[in-house]
Length: 165
Length: 167
Image (cartoon, rainbow over all chains, first blue to last red; front, side, top):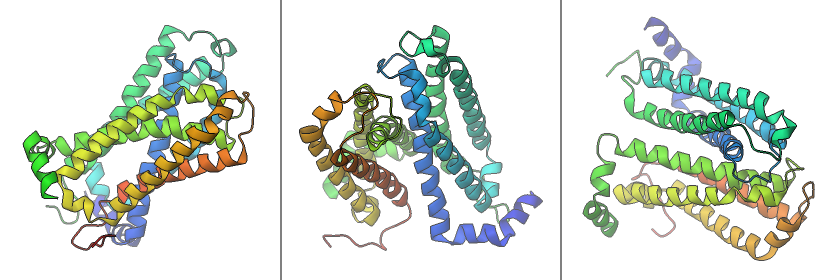
């Protein structure tokens, strides 16, 4: 708990909490970027599931720069929000659940990228049942990531470690 | 405003929204709907602007009905928020701006389907969209990003520190 108090008392953490533009800028960036992270996955997973079959699957990778930039933005804004209220997130199990869900979802993306997006025969033909299952699980996981993220604002045990209430 | 609250009470929306997990459940659905919109309409816009050439615009457009479904979810869930705490929304400049941006996006989409969609459907896999189409796609993308920004900002402005266009 002491290290949480230490982080909260750094001038950067205080600035993150007290500056409206810094805090809400991070919240907004986190939301917009998360929308794009999940959005690119929605398109990719729906295509793998067989919707919009005329999209050449391998070319879906051309949207990956959007995904990469969004993932970086999500991570940076997430760390900034964490620095603002470290105790709020780190003492909440839901926060670790969210991180685990995101990690699992990204692991699936990596697997699907190697398995499907780099296999030219998948462009026009049907994707294997196993890959379609993975795409379905990916969609469920991203919905779970969103839900756990939203619930963070309602399930925390404290706002700040330095003055708990 | 009274009418909205009465409706919310009469239909049980108010009781559900103010129950233990009502608000975050509906917020989660609202964000899932938003992601459907970004992932389909947003990527279609990006393709028209010039990203991911090689994917036929008409093929990508097949995903747009999912974005429309997401939009439907968000109209419904958004309505649940507004009727359950109308004072937090109607007098909120972020909410007013959000509605204005949705209005612009609405006119923009009508213009797109009336005048530009035919050429987009007929275009080849690596074709460039016309400059007008690119502008319309950029307006669409900017409006929806603006809608997300304003949605997030609604919690920043808390009435009574409010102003509105009609008061």
